[in-house]
Amino acid sequence: MSCMCHALLNLHAILIFQLLLFFVSTIQSNFFFGQIWEDILGFENAEFYIKRWPRLDGLRFQDVLISFPEAIPCGVKVAAEGGKINLNPDDNYVLKEGDEVLVIAEDDDTYAPGPLPEVILLFSPSEQKVAFSLMIFKFKILLN
Image 1: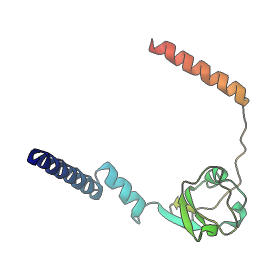
Image 2: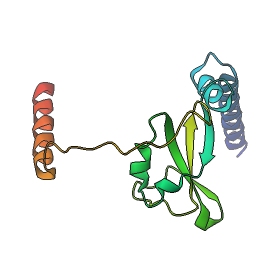
Image 3: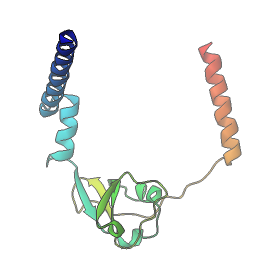
């Protein structure tokens, strides 16, 4: 039984050491994770902003995603749920009156929703499936 306890203690020490290394790497700006945290949470680059855009009411979130040319929508503050923030909502979520959009942007006055871009389908859904199947078939041939 004591051998099992020593193994668990060693595993615990290893996990603590790995966690410590992770936090140290996030603090230092020359590491990948640290740079991400610095960019998102710092005040020099893009920041999080939340704002109400009444003209987006009734749009699906997938349309909201492409309506901001200078920002990245990443969530919705849902008014009907007492202001709960829903990060990365379903594409089919429809914005309702009172909902606010959470975005990552350079500054609070540098972004606004624009007109929805026109999407042109070059192939019907069945033609897309055939094209995709042919692409996979050719890829498999290349692997052999």
